[in-house]
Length: 136
Length: 340
Ligand SMILES: Nc1nc2c(ncn2[C@@H]2O[C@H](COP(=O)(O)OP(=O)(O)OP(=O)(O)O)[C@@H](O)[C@H]2O)c(=O)[nH]1
Ligand SMILES: [Mg+2]
Image 1 (cartoon, each protein chain N blue to C red):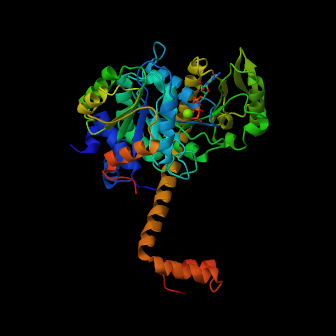
Image 2: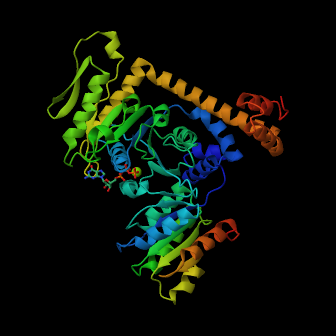
């Protein structure tokens, strides 16, 4: 049982109180064999980065429905870099206007997912980002 | 600088990395553990076990918060938390959700929380939990809180690892007698009735107390100013000094009620272990158990390398065809696959 597991932090930064989507993704990633650290609602960027550090995750999935993604995501990336965790891959899910997607990708986000995304696609992208190979 | 040196210097990123290497049983992790081991043995290990949803994580959160912000006069302690959740037996994946209850601890550099998946282990801990605890111990964390999988049964593994084991019960888990599984007295150093704000707390406490009285008939457990105390009935000197009767404490983890008393009970138990020499005995027993477990694992994997799959299959088939007995099969397999 000593094979390398992909560790993912699923976090909900910001003030909106809906975590259904985040929980669905967390469960899908678990069912794909990953270890998912779930931290609950209303995380500050500082809390997200701290949990990512202590848990030594490969991936962070941020679920943001509040519209504050252009403030929250750069801040998370900034603290990760300050902590020496540039290698952590960031995915963002939620309600993200089309014009913001390229801006998020530019600052280092690996994938952005809107409502209705297939969890299979997310799983494949996460695997590819971490292991560098698509699912078998 | 080696990973171990960075950990000893208190570098949190190095610690997080090392914990992963250990969890994945990488050679670098083993090497660092070897360097760190002489620095271990100082921390007080507190196990927190109990059925799912009884409030273990919420209690750990409160305990850690108290140790970080003690009443005046008490020392502030560095706290590490290891929280174990089950792995899915089908996919090997896991959702580790204990941090949800530990928000109060974020932003405090004197706290380090690590979630672990049980990864196929059934005893409430993960295969590498004790090694991870060694890293925290060596890094100078004074109290290490270990939350087990909420499996709903007495977890012997945690009692073996921890110095002080808290068994957490809560009212409303159905039939009280059934909820309180036999065997918890063997592992509990402190019995916690959490969710004391809920109806039925008296029933839970009564069930625990009658179990205690059955186990320790020379003591009587009484209630005194609302706190449960044990009174020695036939004081027989030395013997009763070395006897620890698990206290029963009520808590409301969501509000923090009963936490100072729980911290005190943990300190009392720690002092008890020191004065009776039991701490030394427990450490010894734990290290011996760990040694034997490692020997078994290593011998099996070494043997596995010596026997080819085809040899193994051949002997297995002979066994199934009842040409050889199980003992003869073992003998043949240990002989490098040569039929006896
Ligand atoms: N009323 C009441 N609810 C509590 C108390 N302590 C915890 N809870 C609630 O009980 C639920 C479970 O609490 P947790 O701390 O997650 O319990 P746990 O034992 O760690 O759960 P698992 O890790 O899933 O086994 C949460 O909704 C808590 O808010 C308490 O003292 N009173
Ligand atoms: Mg828990």
